Length: 117
Figure 1 (spheres, one colour):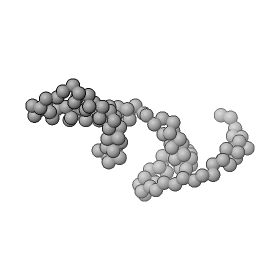
Figure 2 (cartoon, rainbow, N blue to C red):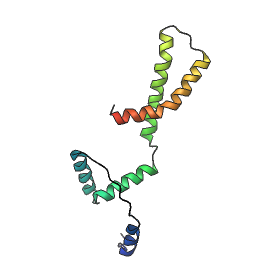
Figure 3 (cartoon, one colour):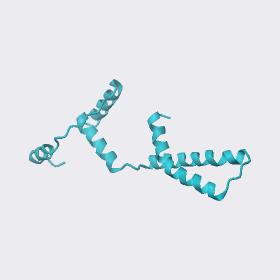
Figure 4 (cartoon, helix red, strand yellow):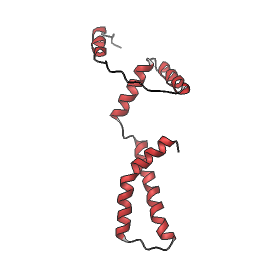
């Protein structure tokens, strides 16, 4: 490993002048602190890295999979009811359902994640 160039570290840190804070529960703070220590980095540095990584890769495979699963669930719920009740489902109505599911699946998936379901 190359030795740290303290001049470049100071120069880089001189540009970090905008603090951003978050509020955590006591348990969350303990978990974040323990994880940062296990990675041998300061808690603030680990949180900064986590935020920047999340910004670089917002569409993870898990997010995409969840969106698609929610989309299939929404499609089934909206298509099966007319079929189960004997109502006709025209091609135009089906296309409307598909378009609506496509618009809603991401927001519904995010809501489920935030609610912890």
